[in-house]
Length: 360
Image (cartoon, rainbow, N blue to C red; front, side):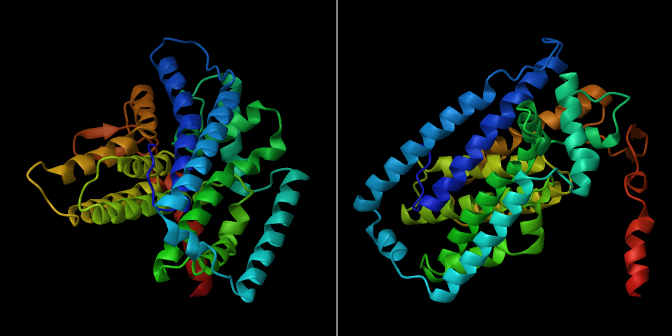
């Protein structure tokens, strides 16, 4: 009941975002207790079991609700979904299916080999699991000080002992990207058929296919930002069709904020993109109209509050452990000097200049 989207694809995005939060945020809460000195060890317990059960129940309720509403309120959508898909689109989808089947089979019968994943993503998650804490210590590499929402998912997989399933961490993000492309593509011509070529094109982008079974975080973050954008646009459409009444639809806005916050808490480079999404969301909500109750500002505040929930832990951890909220990035502004490393210490400028010199 919390999500009231017009189309099942949007509900699927919101459901996946909520599920990811139920996996990540509880671990952050446990780690917060550790930072506060209230517990000495990070205990996961039966988190997988209870989250899996909750997700299965939510999927069942969502499917049942979509079937009931599909006959009563959205008959026109059912008509769109029954439109025939052209043969060349079907061939493209079959090619995509074959490619991803091979990638998944390779993941299941081989060991992780993605460079960034093997060098620091997986080792960071493994260190957290072995030490039972997410604290930033003097012995930790600066990479272990970065926000790590994706590494928390890696930690959960490593706790099962099935290392070959680490690539499955990317599947929720891949599914969110698929649903977002399907919905946004459908909006181009008000037909579900037009969304499938968009999905095929997106899934065949080399970096998307490559990271679908690897330990990188870029696909995960990008998918969440696209999903957040899709939820915001759907929220705006519903408010317009409901003559400005947003009551009962704010679940979409909450899910959008949570998706944006998950991306912020996964990689610093997406802080900029999250700011752009926030500005776009603020503009979209402002364009819905103003009223004496300042409803627009309450909507923006709701989006921001939801975004803070899955990301604020990493800034709090850095502040408690180092005194610098954006550690490992050093801050030197006038008399203010906070510890950290310089950008040139993270990546040698010659690494990028070598490509420029090559092409010049």
